[in-house]
Length: 63
Image (cartoon, rainbow, N blue to C red; front, side, top):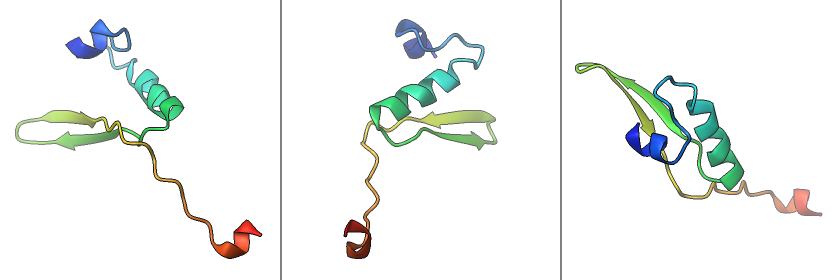
């Protein structure tokens, strides 16, 4: 959270998460993944800087 606070998109209340999703969408990066893990209890947010893969269209759709 400290990293997000330093760049102005997190404030420890959870309300910065929509901002993160919006930024990732605007940049065309793969969407963040939120996972809940147990023992110990934690929530993991995985952020990938890879661009989303474009969906391939068939030759029929290209015409």
